[in-house]
Image (cartoon, rainbow, N blue to C red; front, side, top):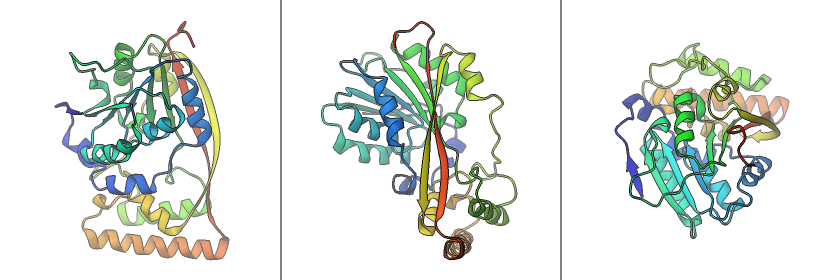
Length: 286
């Protein structure tokens, strides 16, 4: 089932409009230890339900379907219709007896449809998505809809824009040469960092019992893999360039740069840390 809510602004829909087809192939998934951590929050639940906010192409539900065979229901929310189409395509063959609701809308506006049997979520997840949302509004919504024992997970590991390595610094400089020095966040928009940290938002919410977990991740990229990844980002996807010729020129320059670095210095390695903030209501049963 797919539902739509009339709260999505055109710029939200457009932010990743050219990225969906590349997302599932080129976006790194969740590291296995992080998946096991999330699965552990559902231990002992007989028919657990997941609410994934900013689901993209469904990476979190896909990982949990493999780790939690008794997962009973998934509600997946995104502001981009193309992302949801890809999520349905990816998740459909894996569902088994698990039911799926896709919602085209903003995270803070989610509500369980009246008159349906959609269960209260036991786990609410934000994977590389919280910073795009009305975070406090989404946490307040989660408090309204989630089960009494539920867990909220906010997680991610930055991007190749923020990663500090010699090859990523050169890549960032090339992106800035083509698109301007400010980090882009869609057409005509510069990225603005959240005013408060995730921890501050959680401390001010109902979900103030927080545990932080870090998982080291080493990724080795190929030049073509980096180009595919950049097509999925808010700071270098094809829609940010004035035309296809401009994007083609950027990709040619990026491929030449990355190939030259790999030939001279060795593999393009990203040493990252995947962070998970697990949050509960104070006093809830773990």
